[in-house]
Image (cartoon, rainbow, N blue to C red; front, side):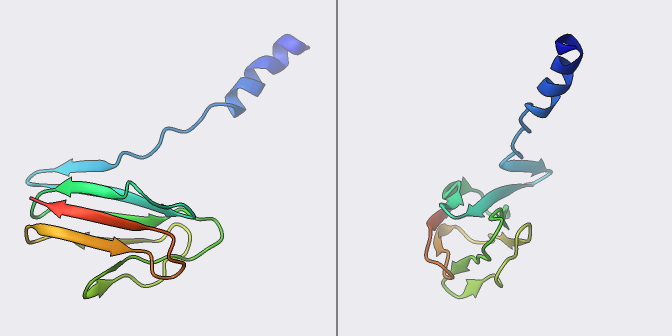
Length: 109
């Protein structure tokens, strides 16, 4: 009986692989940042002009947002995302304004 149950127990223990932090398309890249109770992950990216970043709320209970100077997302429910394309070189700092749980920076080369 133990031999029969062992394969079924092992299937439930397999961890899912995390989603890649970057997808490449011709001429541009798309980066992904998770938002949870600990802040942003990753909280620092170096990207190129024309690249995009999507922030996704991975928190099971709380709504979160992303705020830059002059630009902000709506409050995001679990699983919702907000995407920003960076068209100019520079350093862009952002924060989570709802609970103040994190800060991040995007450097556009």
